[in-house]
Amino acid sequence: MKGNIYDEFEWRGLLYDATPDLKELLGKESVTCYIGFDPTAASLHVGSLLPIMGLARMQQFGHTPIALVGGGTGLIGDPSGKTAERQLLTKEKVAENIEGIRAQLAHFLDFGRTPNPARIENNHDWLGSLQLIDFLRDTGKHFTVNYMLSKESVKRRIESEDGISYTEFTYMMLQAYDFLELNRRADCLLQMGGSDQWGNILAGTDLIRRVNGKKAHGLVFPLITNAAGTKFGKTEAGNVWLDPELTSPYKFYQFWLNTDDRDVVHYLKSFTWLDREAITGLEESVRDNPGAREAQRTLAREVTAMLHGQTELDKAEAAAGVLFGGSLENLAVRDLKDIFEDVPSTVMSRNELSGEGVGLLDLCTRTGLAASNGEARRLIRQGGLFINNERMEDENGRVTAEAGIGGELLVLRKGKKSYHLVQIGQD
RNA sequence: GGACGGGUACCGAAGCGGUCAACCGGGCUGGACUGUAAAUCCAGUGUCUUUCGACUUCGGAGGUUCGAAUCCUCCCCCGUCCA
Image: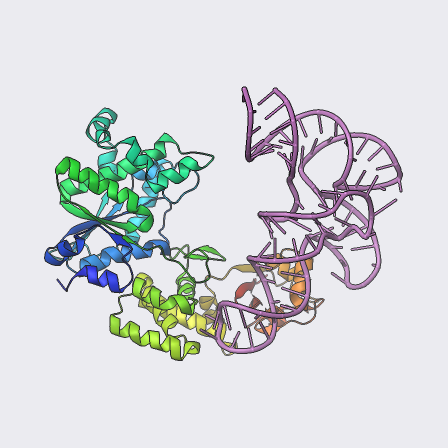
């Protein structure tokens, strides 16, 4: 063991709440711990990165992590943090999602490590065959409705108009049961999670105490916030996913690079392996020379490399260099296509672009850069349209194939960041 | 079932017979500044044409009127109070 993980979590600011005496326990023995992941989608998003890293850190410090995917509970839906009843997922969908999530967890956890290999469990294995009568007698008996009603996640929903279904009301018991089951099977003594899970986790430790007579623990991480007050992990384009098919490594890298100064140190502590010394150095850099954005760059590099690997990171940085560096000249068509890999593109026939060519307004609506001619016109008037990095001034202008790079590519840009590729077909 | 109040563009919210494509705020999109930032400032934000102008919008359907988001009738939905 490399010291107490509890202290590690503490200085990183990852300790929102924990049960008493946990620190002592973690200091003296190797503990098996788990975190549950909801299979609501086929990919996890950056919001899940914190708990995943939490497990990985535990493993680094010699503890044994279990990632629990909620194949059973996912069929029910967790009311925590939700203001409305959830749409139920089909069993097939849940099974499919679990496969996706499993693959992603593998990037962070070491399943071959000795003596503390990571494991993935699926709570469907025990919840799926659970008998209602047995469950009510053995588990339900330990919960008073009063207790459950007093939990924040339930309380909020009781007060809301739509209420809460019996199904979701039961969720807490199932999660508690998971903990109990893992305690039995793997001697798991600690459940971790986001701070919204605190109530559910305590329900689990209570249940374990009553049924197994053992003392189990909980630890929760703070909610990740950002200075702008928006939801962490969201961009204009939507969620930032871990799956490269859903969020390209380039966009992933950009997401981190665009971190606010006020958040960057916090994120470095939360999402990277960098040690205290390295982070202190970067903290100074943010203060003394914020324009260099060294902290952001490091953050983006670390996290991207960890998830997608060095090769993808290199590509993402190369693309950023071109996209924000300026000139598109001197670049081969093939390189451009590579750099703009995840930029939306449209194919247009050479025919359309010969002779008079195509009007700029048309081009904007065709490619979806503008929703209407009026919008396109506005865009050009305000100087926001670029073709091959050259500002278009004339709203009635036209483009022909001659303007294409190598005669086959038009790089359209709206504003600073929004690119669209037009590939000129051969016919 | 009864009594009020309300449904306006992405959201909040004015307007309450013509001068309303509809004040204002937020959001969003451009631009300037800059660090691919924050803050700030400027511009824009129904469609078509952009100069004038035309057309379609204010829960839905009808109606009154030269003319309605604004008045009337019916219907639908939401909130509050009384049963």
